Structure formats: C-alpha cells, structure tokens
Image (cartoon, rainbow, N blue to C red; front, side, top):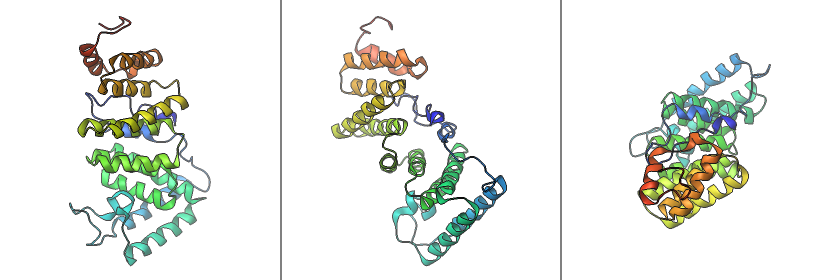
Length: 269
C-alpha cells in the first residue's frame, strides 16, 4: 500500500488529478511475486491469452461513442453474448491452469492494468481491470483502476461510483478513501452539492483516524473547510499537514487561503 501514498498529493485547486505517469505509483506493494507456479513465462502466456477477449465485440455492446464493452467499467454491466461467455469461460479455465488461484490471477491483471494506465493506454487498461474483476469481484484494485481510467476519460460520476465499489471491498484503506474524497471534492467544485462535500469530509475524517501520520487527508480537509468558508479551520488542517509532510503542501492553494484569511500562526505571509 505504501507505494500508493503519492497518488493524491496534489490538490484539485490548481493541478489536475493524476498526471500521466502518476497512476503507476498505484501498483499495490501486495501484488503477487513470481513463484514456481507463476513464473514470468506463465504470466506472459496468460497475458497473451487475454488478448482473445479483446477481439470479442458485439454491435449491440457499445456505448454512445462506439466503445467496445470490454473497455467499459465492469464490461458495461450488461448481459453478455454467447460468444463473450464462451471466451470468458476459456479465459477463466486458462487462468485456473496457469495461476495458483483466481485471486492471484486477478492481482496480476490489475497490475497489468496499472502498467497500461501509466503508458496512457486507457482502453487496454480498462480491459485488464475488467479481467481482474471477472477473476475476483472482491478485488478493490480492479474497481480502483477502473475509477482512475474513468477519471482520465472525464467520466467523473463513473469514477466515483467505481471507487465507492472499491471502498466497499477495502473499507479500511485510507488511501482509497482519500482518493474517493478527492474526486467528490472535484465533483462538488463542478456541481455544488452539500451532501457530496459532506461525504468527502466523512471519508477524510475516517482516513485520518486510520492513518493519522498521513498528511494528505489533512490537506484535503483544509480544502473542504476553505470551500465552506471556514478559513480558521482550513488553516488548522493546513498546519497539521505541514507538520507531517511539507511535500504535500500546494502553494497555489496556500496563496488562495492567504488571500481569504491571514495565517493565524504567522508562518506564511
């Protein structure tokens, strides 16, 4: 999990969420290591075999822009054709032969998804995360990855929905909570809704309780207080973040905060 800690270090006030290279930092430190059963050769064969699913398309299984169902979150959550089902059975059987478990295979395809996100191949990444979900629908990484892909495709509501599904499977993951809250903050900035901001604040408060030494949630809580025009509390959270990790502080946001209210501690002028 520690390798994910840099994901949300940039506030949404002035910087875009997720630079092209950033998602590679999301690859879980818990991803399976190679073993005698899951050697590089076997894994490469499984990855090659997954290409067969990419060729399965159906004229009725597309979205408004013509995207294949394989690249939609959770395969579009639509009924599948007989051909798709046959290909999936073949794929699952192949994974059963080449991995010690479907959970291990799911972790592998999720990791491949992050690699493709880092390379900017979002459709291929979405397909890999879908395969990860197909293998294990309790794998939070599959939903998390699909959420990142949706965000980069400017599909914010779907991104939030996927991260919420991921949090349902990993309800003590403070980094995932912070990611979800960040998307909700952005959604609030685009379409103000008090309930959305309240939900984001709740996620961040829980993230702080789980991981009190992580500065990022404090930075986000400062932003929420700023959006609520509670500048005194915004400064309190900002200084809490500062005391933990200077690298998470956003100077653009700091200037905005200074413009609204001077630093009560006089540290920033």
